[in-house]
Image 1: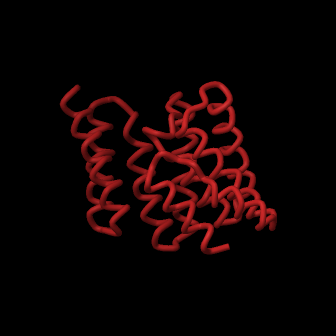
Image 2: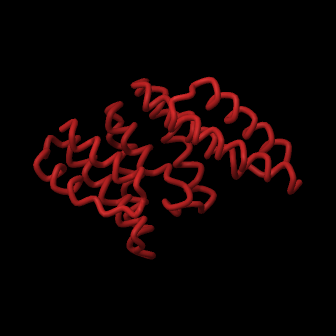
Length: 173
């Protein structure tokens, strides 16, 4: 029960940290462990976040198809569970980024629209940063680079990692 959930949560956190540092083996091992602990606990909550961690790794390695598959699926499952707060689960921005880069624009727009809805109901600095990022990504996908660049330059997320992601994307436009 609860102990397995704690292990699933810890494994997810480790998988995401490994993904962010480029440790492919560590990411895959921790994500697999997290999924296993989640299944054994009977609680599916950490299945999608472990997929998110692997998707982040794939995105960082430029493997856009696998990244989009993992991240879009994780975003959809998290939404289905009602877990949508971007300060805790940043899956939506990663999913939109991967979907845009993999040219899965319908998926990107659907996830961005859901995030906008979360922001409209409960605007926070985190939802502001996340919606700004997803709007910029969608504008970029439409070839509206100046508008995307303006949003990315004034990103406003309280997360240094998210601000860095926005500035990195801005530099690539």
